[in-house]
Amino acid sequence: IDCLSKVIDGLECLSHRYTITMLGRFISYEYEQKFKDHFRDLIENDKIKLVDYIDNSEIGQFLQKFDIGLLPFSHGAAPNRSSLIALLCAGICVVTTYKKGVTPSYLEEGVNCILHEPDDAQGMIESISLLLDDENKLNAIKKNSKKLTKTFDWDIGARTIAKYYDKSL
Image (cartoon, rainbow, N blue to C red):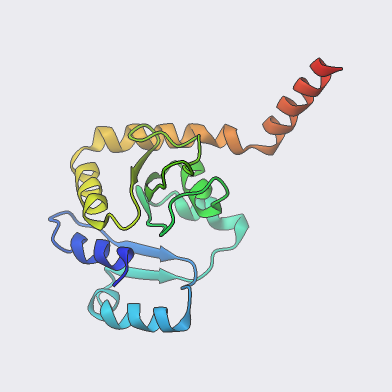
């Protein structure tokens, strides 16, 4: 069973109320069937909601509903992960994985995200539990992740590049 499934299994032991919303498509039909079979009861009882696709024009508003985003990448977060960037810009506390030497420079452990090594399901479960227990920490990370929006703003980026270009002339 993969890391995501281990985390979901582990979350069932928490005393907190939560709903897991999975956004996006499964990596394969076989994986989707295996996942749905494994979590049939949680899906049928609306503890896990599967959302296949959200239009780009609606994704920001849709993401505003959530406090914590879990991204257990098997190879760690990479700078070009659009799902990571979308969650951060929406001001969601992201619990994700990293790989030494590849982690994006804009990620700061405990400041704008929570980082774990790939396949550290138990660590991710513990982090989610701690965040649910400590609303101040959760809100601080959400606030700091939202600040990253400027990092990915095309207008700001273009002005910054133009400013450096003008200085070099």
